[in-house]
Image (cartoon, rainbow, N blue to C red; front, side, top):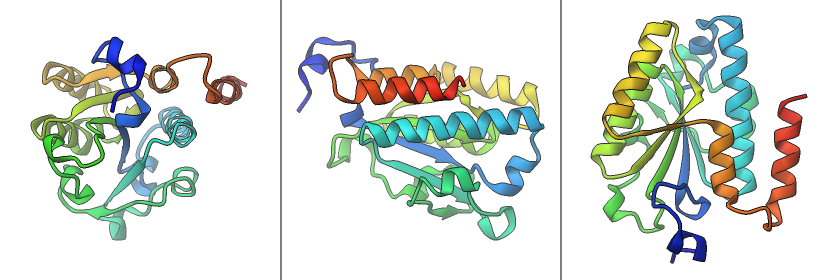
Length: 196
């Protein structure tokens, strides 16, 4: 059942009660192929996003593409995410076991997506989520690829296909909804610690 703010707010806004966070393939060997600056940004921003999801009770799943060869999820995320199914398909949707959005039993029809690489596993996952009827949001500061052209082209394609493109901080404040909720102070502290 929607909260009062959901009943009157934009259907484009994310809500913690209807969201899931999916972290796609942020694994040791994949991350090591990125530039140091990109790697640090990606892991730091994803950690911030996962901590925010935990604060608001949003379920988090991370996937691992062929972990025997590409290694596990990087430690700062693995220690925060317990559900990490492995896969060989580039799209992560199948390995999550999620039904189509119309058949969800928990009303979590909004999927927030982060990870890598933007133009391969992430892109194919997003397109499959959209085809399955999910309201799909891509967190632009929490995705990466080795090539900037591949990365930017993938963002354009996902947006043109119907995904919403936003940032980690925007996601967390949409989940928070109001400065009146108890989580707001903890969110403010999380944001402040991110900039220090």
